[in-house]
Image (cartoon, rainbow, N blue to C red):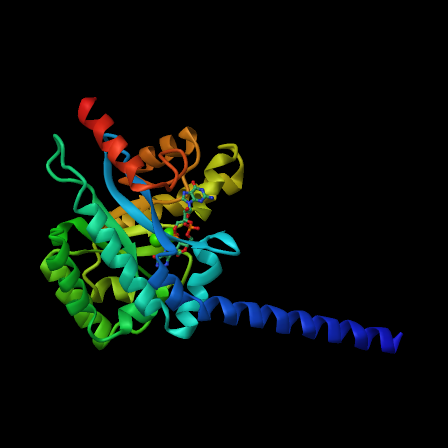
Length: 286
Ligand code: C2E
Ligand code: CA
Ligand code: CA
């Protein structure tokens, strides 16, 4: 029995080693993949809950890997963060999203939708972020108001020094700053006082509860949490976007609670930029 246990452990270790190797190989392939153009962006609408217009669009990175096929960001973003390769990869995402968004027409509306780009912790803390963003805006001609940077709460844990200065400078230029996955990380809200945040994005986990039956206590708790996050945001003059909205019933509840915008399959799945252009076209004709 003991020997068998030992063998199991070896197997487990070998498995772990294999996994580590696979992870290493994947991250080592990122620079070449960038050169070969294997990364691409999908775009997902952020829809106003008041009038149904598409106020913004989130850029989501994907990897068309020659052997492994289509890879979701969850497979490689963590790795890229660990190895620092998120810096060139994130730089490419920012530049490509801005280049694409610059082509979106305003149509009949006051302005074309903004493009929302995820920034990894490392990118936020890196000196030169402001210069990099400025350069992208200059090269693409995208107005700063049409760029939103999504930052997670964990990136905001140290609200002193470089990141705060950088984010203030960007906000002063007119760039929007959103807190991503708000309510899933730390309960320390001091950064909301110190940072020029314009929007809170609430992760889908509270919305899942809205699917349930309204008399279910869990549904009611989720709804109360959402309602209080919305009033917190509005008290601070921030807009609220809720993610992971999959049904019309959820959208209705969120509208009643006072959420400003929603993102999720109910309003549109992530897809190629052509899908965004079609949607703008339909809005113009409506
Ligand atoms: P996120 O920023 O929270 O992005 C939203 C995720 O929810 C996306 O997954 C999106 O496809 C998914 N989603 C959208 N609507 C629904 C819905 O109605 N139901 C459900 N169940 N899911 C929905 P995706 O594209 O796999 O991205 C996963 C995460 O990868 C993102 O989470 C973000 O943290 C990260 N990520 C994606 N692109 C980038 C990037 O360019 N840079 C960095 N640093 N991270 C990125
Ligand atoms: Ca995001
Ligand atoms: Ca999110």
